Length: 98
Image 1 (spheres, rainbow, N blue to C red):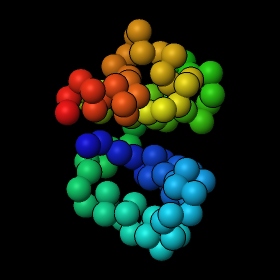
Image 2 (image 1 turned 135 degrees about the horizontal axis):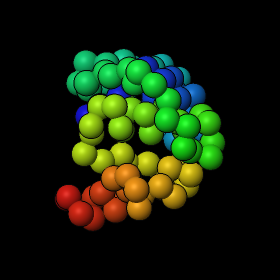
Image 3 (image 1 turned 180 degrees about the vertical axis):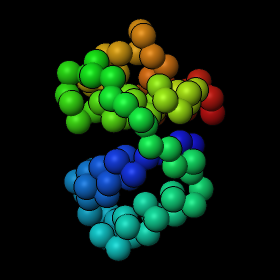
């Protein structure tokens, strides 16, 4: 697993909305902190500027710069690039690799 500090920050920002408060703010922070120990933290050196939503550019840059095998996301702007980059939904990833 490859992550960046940007992704961890986004994770902490977005997860409360997605989890519908099944996780407390403390649990979300602890989960993000755990990722610091189990993931390879990589900071991309450049932005590539090919994503419609500029907030997604650091995510694509991480995929490219880290040479990760696949980016797993539900983000539609990133998924629209799946013909050019190895990007798939969590469901598709589980279907293919589980």
